Image (cartoon, rainbow, N blue to C red; front, top):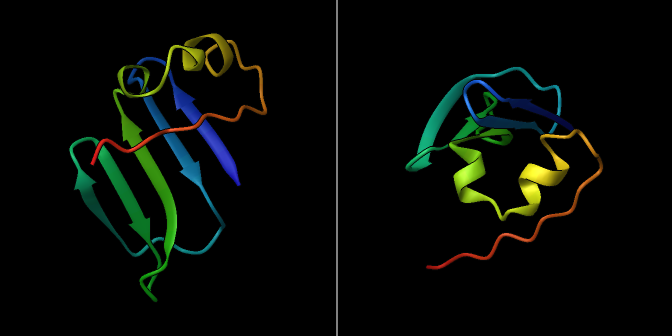
Amino acid sequence: MRFHYDKKQDALYIRFNENLYAESDEIHEGIILDYNKQGKIIGMEILDVSKKFPRQFKTEIIKRKLPLSILIESKI
């Protein structure tokens, strides 16, 4: 699993494996899943991530203190 944070775009990309990309789907505003040819999720991009994650995100990820465990609770 790989993580990439783009400070300028405030976007976090999580790559679960190295399978080839086939298509994407925005499942919620600012949350995009990438799929392989078999329809399996291979990655996820989160836009405006510093607004969606807890304050701990800024102190840990932006300063590149990895690994980091963040619990994200759904409000659904």
